[in-house]
Image 1 (cartoon, rainbow, N blue to C red):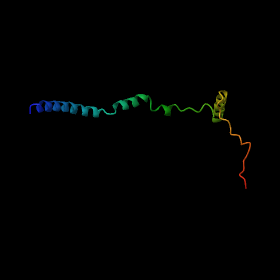
Image 2: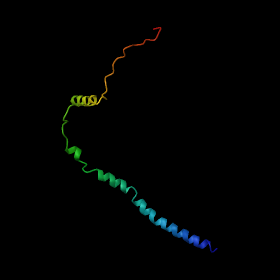
Image 3: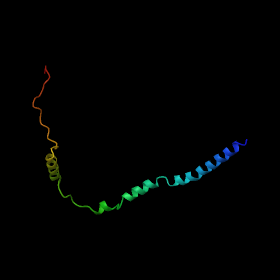
Image 4: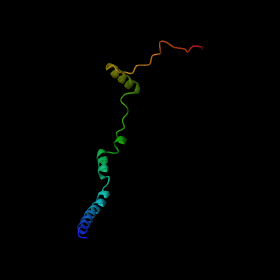
Length: 91
């Protein structure tokens, strides 16, 4: 019975150490995420105070984007109709 007593005492001490910290960890669960989210928001009312009319209309913006893209050679071209139309035989 003597080897069982030290092992039982060691197990009881280890178990007591684990139980004391678990509630403390769980009480702060998610604090880091909440703090990081709160740090990213400076002023919640900024969009409602800084309402300005758009500087350019949609047509001018589309033209500027097309010109910029075509200067680098990757502009989306309009689809051209096919040069040859194939009709299935028998119709």
